[in-house]
Image 1 (tube, helix red, strand yellow):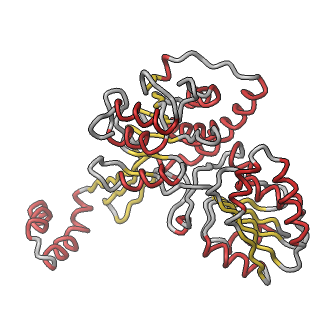
Image 2 (image 1 turned 90 degrees about the vertical axis):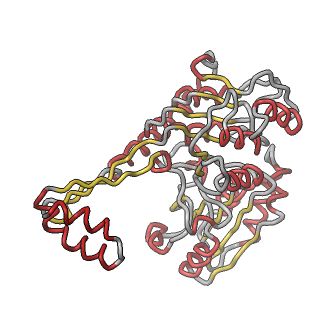
Amino acid sequence: VRFSGDEAVIKYTKKFDGVELDNIVERVSDLPDPKLDPDVQAAFDVAFDNIYKFHLAQRKTQQLEVETMPGVKCRRVARSIDAVGLYVPGGTAVLPSTALMLAVPAGIAGCETIVLATPPRSDGSICPEVLYCAKKAGATHILKAGGAQAVAAMAWGTNSCPKVDKILGPGNQYVTAAKMLLQNSESMISIDMPAGPSEVLVIADRNANAIHVAADLLSQAEHGPDSQVVLVAVGSVDLEAIEEQVYKQCQELPRGDIASVALGHSFIVVARGMAEACKFSNVYAPEHLIVNAEDAEAWLDHIKNAGSVFLGRWTPESVGDYASGTNHVLPTYGYARMYGGVSLDSFVKYMTVQSLSREGLGLIGPSVAMMAEVEGLDAHKRAVTLRLA
């Protein structure tokens, strides 16, 4: 893709997705508005509004100004990343919700170029729901490709695909590997985080409803055969009832075959108490953590490592995946130990600014000059002392 550009993307889209493309990029403004079922459109509008509200509120924490001593003012200002690439999966399941999760904060941040990459349908067209979300959220380009070839096209740029400065979004192991390889290449891009196959860890006590616990586990297992779900049972939980529900509900799912493969490498842990359950969860560092237990809120301070947390009996992970307002692009593979999920901050970089008065330089200058002398950097020292002479 680096050397052949559009031609390579067309080649690999035909090879891996079985789709022949004439062109790989569409300008969103050139595409007609898609026609959606009114109920479907209304659901995405609710999600848009909540995601917009939650991410817009994050602006309040971005700017700060401190006078560290008289006449010495320090500020932090946010500036949007000029061009971002958003990866919206579309392999075994089309995920228009991801288009909202990525494009909404990109628009709020003020990114000028927003390239949304998503695999095309069999006829080469774009999923109408993805297009609707892309238009509503302000994406500028759609790259009709998925997989590593789409990530590479956004990283290097092609004749038709703008080069971006940062790539964000979840994907399978190939997408994740491409992101991680390219961030250390000459393409000069950054990435949001390693966001691979989906995970959920459910902490359930003896009063947790077995039907709900099973449904929560399956909600992530159905994402793909490489997903993993974990149940941490606290105390005398009826594991047999939960396992029966998992089997029963899995049989009823259209994607039950996929979920059953994921269940094959999932597991149950029995904890002696909530403290031990939280301790295990912090080691595992799940993408999604559901705390289906009494006084769930009381245990939040014990949770250190998780992409997104769902507290209480009435908080299924599904609400965060779609419409609560939080972002569903989250770290996996245990990377929640050192990464957070996508937020407004993911689309900006911070600049620090300092401005000094003569009085301020007079107060701080001697300390600066002395430190420069200790480090043997005389030009640094002189930049201060010559002003104060």
